[in-house]
Image (tube, rainbow, N blue to C red; front, top):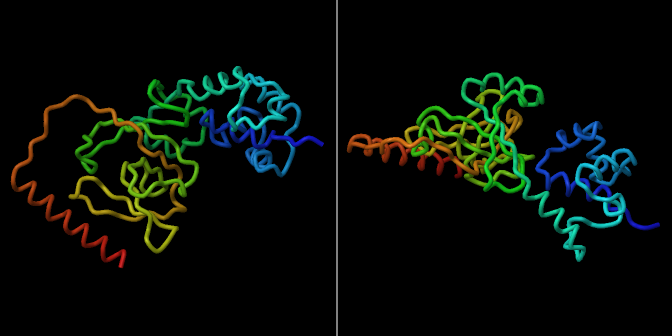
Length: 251
């Protein structure tokens, strides 16, 4: 019996489209757990599911079943379809500060997300993106009122050390910080501000709902901020205290 690439191809196409398992499963009208079983090749996809995928990605059932779509192909038309798929313009939903409380309650609700304003950025590649408005000076020199466009990470294991991220958690809400892995525990993260006037703090991994790694910062044109000697001295002092605190934690 010929090898079937159906499960492998479902996972590849979903990632090319920048969809989570939950989002892709909803498009196919199946449970996320069933899609997971297909992708992990613990079950063979039903014919009606394969037909939906075939229509969605404009790929024949024969290609879906018999070809590894993640490998380079000699078939020119197939390569062109993959290029168009990966180059598709991403729709970015925008979460303003006034919608932050509603987002915490409805971040997994498709109807809530659909009500948010959207925009596109042609320079983005494939992936799942969202934009968040940030308020406050904790991430200076990124000014208050900036919009952070982040790419969704499906797991906290994908967080790069000290990467700037939008972190959505049960207790802290929506914050923009640099994320540092805890040196002695995988169950904790340290969130660090770029402005040294703010002390780092820890969050439990189990409290983290979403992580969006920052890709683009959109800011308004404003006057250049000027610092006096006193402010600079305080910044240096606070920075030294933070470095000392982090060294003690690491030791």
